[in-house]
Structure formats: structure tokens, C-alpha cells
Image (cartoon, rainbow, N blue to C red):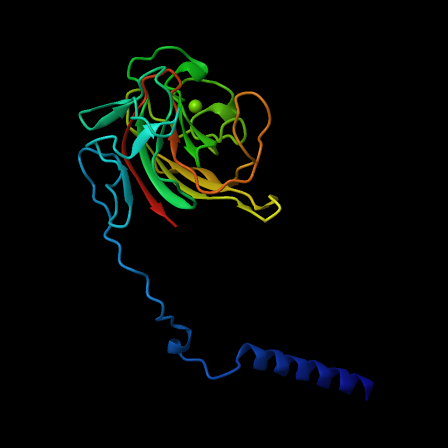
Length: 254
Ligand code: MG
């Protein structure tokens, strides 16, 4: 009798589980989502002047070769960007200082193309060094890392002095390279405590090098990462005394 009860209980629970899995009659249509509908974006196009795609229709173009109007000196955040623009290419003027966007950003997708000097000069951190700072303070390293050993968390594709890239996908000196970046900004509560850290995904020349990496804080040359509450910030490009160049820079806010 006891055995019969156990069998019945087992059968009942199996029937109940089945009922929970199928609350109503399922049709192909019952799992179709029609609303909302993703808005239309016209994709960028392949172009002989760029390595990736040109800006899609909903992007903010930060540099398309015409001028540096979207950029200012990072020294004061307002004076003219001191780098050169010739033949549609923006190039660092050594010792002129970093530049940054006029506009401030939170979460975004970003595309940027960069090129280290064809003439190899220097080694380690001194070869084609620049950088892209998320919100002005978290550096994604730009460096000629082709046959140029340096500390792993300081080579191209690293979050500087924090997280080395998953692989070294570098092209050689003088070749155009691409970064496609997905960045989400940190959140802070009203007491200034960080509730969500910043995260970054980076694809370097079509190869994943940072996979939803948590950014631990600022990326100083000396010292530990630091996080203090902040809001939106600029994209900053680094003058590290090397004539690294940039082109086709666009950003899509998320
Ligand atoms: Mg750098």
C-alpha cells in the first residue's frame, strides 16, 4: 500500500510539472514578439579610406577626416585641439598634450582606427604609444605591439596596468588597426559608493581581446586603480610623445 502511494505521488508530481510547463495551448505565434520593433539604422559602408565601416546613421561622428571640430585640448578642455589633420588623418603632435571630445558620454559603442609610425623608433612603451581613455580616465592602451615585448598589461589591447589582452592581434608598424569598443559606465549611489563597476569589451582588428572586462578604476602609470564618483566624461586620446595617427572615429550612445 505504501509502495502504491509513493508511485501515485510520483505520477501526480510528474503530471503537475507537465502542467506547469504547458500552462496553455502553445502555438508558434505565442512565442513571437512583435512589439516593440527595433528602430532602423542604416549601416556604414566599406570604404577604401577606412579599415572598418564608416559611421552608421545613428552614430556621432567624432572624426571623419574633415576637421578636428569635435575635439579640444585636454589641458583646459576648451582650447583648440593641437594635433594635425592632413589627408584625412589625425596625428599626435608630440608634447602638445592630450586631446578630448567636446561632448561627454556614458555607455557607448565606439569604432576607432589607429596607426603607429612606419619607421620603428624606440622599443617597449616608447613605440607608437598612445591611448584611448573611456570617460577621460580609463585607458585602453594603443601601442606598436608587433614584435615589441613589454609588460603584458601594458601592450596594445590592455586596460593599462590592469588587464592584459586575451591575445596579441597586432598588425605591424605603419598598418592601420581597428578597435571596436563596447563600454558601460559605472554607477554610484547617493553616498558615492560604486554599485556597478565599469565594463569594457574590445575587438582588435576583428579579434576579441577584452571580453566584458571589469575596469578596476583609473589606470595610472604609478600606483593602484582608483575609483571616485563621476558622471559622463569625454573620450580622451593620449599624447605619449609618439606620432601615432587616427581616423574613422565614431560612437553610438547606448
Ligand atoms: Mg598609452
